[in-house]
Image 1 (cartoon, helix red, strand yellow):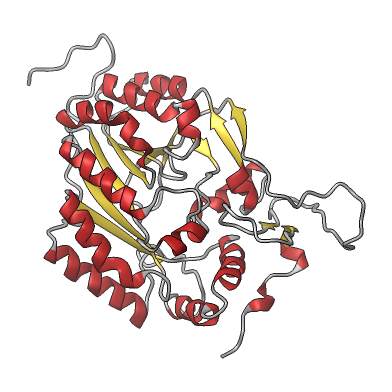
Image 2: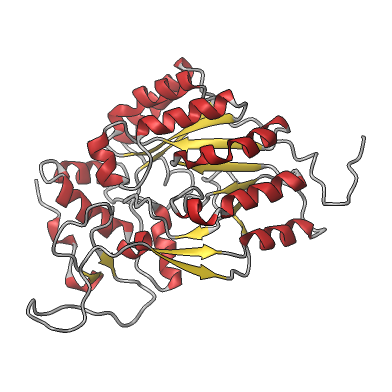
Length: 366
């Protein structure tokens, strides 16, 4: 079987790393396609200012122009989303949000995990948005791009403030996270749940800790995510489980165990995605795969290709998040079988938009 190692070249790497960077998913900084200039280290003995060490996470405060964005993709399952942070310290190597980080002038690789943009004015922007009389209430997704409960939330608490505003307006919200830090807001989410204003998906990718530590290095363990589902379910919050991405040869065999555990913990619905490697993620994942799993890297890579028509990405709506071919169909069949077995409805129950009100506005009795 032909090796795929030559995929990484000097032209598509912005910053090489000589030693494995522990605690990070990406191991390189890929070249930003929007930047004309980039730097390379041509000689190991060079004395120029070159950074190869594992930098600590940096936070950059930004005054954003807007916080609620319309979602055009029919595959996502929401019409609007908001993200208080750009970049994500969780470091999931497969994350599709990495590509969007290039718009900020950074790399989709290590930069995405080490340089976190904090939208400090996000609460003010949301309040202004909801006060606009043109807003006709529909649910808004929180974490449509990066995880709103990533480590930065413990310091800045922007997600908490956004939820408080949504609760004040009775604005329905759908959340997705892989961080048990959500438990800090159990009181608020419980209050919103009583009004049918919140729905939560917890992303669980693997119970294999050796895999999680390198694939999602700064996330909560799989068992902790199941505990999150259990505790929030007991608090009356409607919880679901997101399985994905399913990666053949790495974690697709865990689907049954994850769905079973989530169901027993109180999950009521579910969703899944199949691995797709678009943009810079193709290079990042390829580099990561061969460094962490050299014994099966070729096999995994070719199975991903076989699930996207010979490529590692398919941009076709309705197919790009599910894959195609025999392997993808087996995953889909397993998902249908196990969700029926464990009573995990594929569709989320509707959130209540009828209660929406602006401060000072009385709700109609009819």
